[in-house]
Amino acid sequence: MIHHAPDSGHSHEIEIRVRYQETDGQRRVHHGNYLTYFEMGRTEMLRAQGYTYKAFEDAGLFMVVAEASCRYQAAAEYDDLLILRTHVGKISAASIRHTYELIRGKRIIATGETLVVCVDPDGRIRKLPDWLLPKV
Image (cartoon, one colour):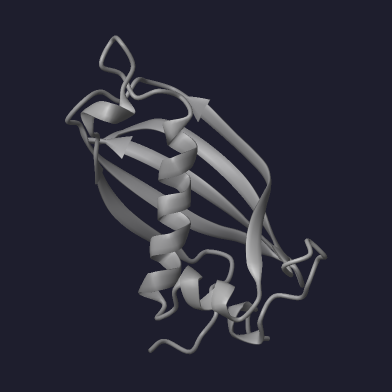
């Protein structure tokens, strides 16, 4: 298990094969699915560090999306093999900003950003667990 926290500059990559049900009538990925891809990137980055989001929730904490954006530069289509690169940006006491690059071949086809905030089951903002904070 990895015991260091992500910090600025930390990144992770996953492959995504576009499934038919993620596309619209033109066989292009529906715009809403890009945010799902970003969530997959965050989840798998956490798993690569030896943690799971399920364990995070079992500890009584939740990461909620407070901000999300996506800039589309080219369409992803059915059966495309994409690389999603997830970067950890700024980490505060209770939030993490991620940026994303979705790549097909050598071309970046979409970029995005999210801000996730740590909350308790009642929705009150809570401090991130120590293992998730950057070491000084």
